[in-house]
Image (cartoon, rainbow, N blue to C red; front, side, top):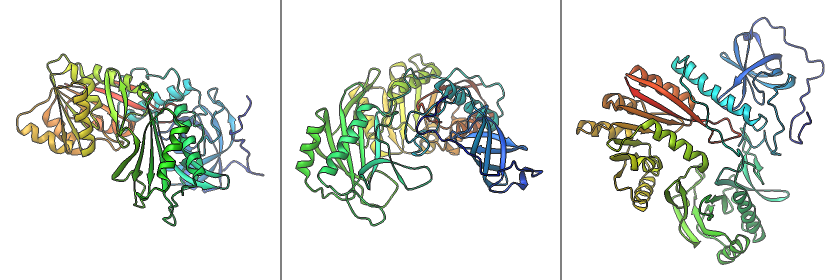
Length: 476
């Protein structure tokens, strides 16, 4: 098999010999070990065992036999790096991206798509086995993507200066070194094109790039969003100040470079922070938002509005949620951690009432506007913490038939889980982007009287190790 220009060639150190230490506890950095890789970890690393101690090896694939150099030997695990692949996986392929393994945006481009799907199903099974004790998980086959490339409808890229000029990219793994990701194969081509043309205009007009160390310069981040259904394009410049030089010329040149532009915005973030957006957004030209749709739902997306990054797979995920909810038109539903209300609005035609709960005020306003725009008159959205509002409603006598929750990666708040177990809805639908916290929370729910009916993995982010799940839980 020929190697692509970005595939590493692994070489053992001169005179490197396999460690003959008697126990894993004796291993030290620099020791050479041989490991058979059993599975992929949640971050895409190969996981094997050396004398019963877990070994994590970036870039290694299931069923490979790896000669590796120990980087760190911790009490409970070992981190190592590949020096040689003694037995290659039949699913190892050439990654098409020239910065794969450097930028950190993708973790498993070097694994065939068939291999990726098997690995992601295994990640879910392993999480439920380890954290919930489920040995016979009722799991449906993962919902795959027909074309697992060009799927991201939004890019949010940092700007920096290098010898060759201005670049837009991501920070390399575990560093603050900016990597140019021009032509990223998982972003929609229109998004890549818009990033390139925006960067070229900024460079041509010599508009200064923000430098974090000196707190000097202006433009920090380019944010581009493309409407898959609407064909509308939104470009937002995140700046450190609201004083934008050559504003009229900038707008003119951006419009000339991208005739399909619908909106040009500027968001001001003066703080030295890892957060991308600040609180103030100005429209420099065009509409204050772009239009997009999911199924029969229409959405208006302002520069800071949340929207799913992979609309094609989102429809499959939401249909799984609808299947799990088993709505007949008579049910009351709580949509917890509802964001801009997309799941609740998707379910609204099939339920009697939807109540959405979200902590971010702007998202709640977006949800209300989305409901009005789509005529979903049986939906109400509340600003607050789900763990506070649900018990309050329960005390007032409101007992929903179905609760849907789509929490952040950290999982469900323990107080929310307690509230669910006290409220006792007939069905609980859990949407998760983190199999580990999902399994831990499902253990709490099953110990509290629920049963996992089925788990549906969805491949929302091909070429990465992330896997989304929809879990149908029913009250015993």
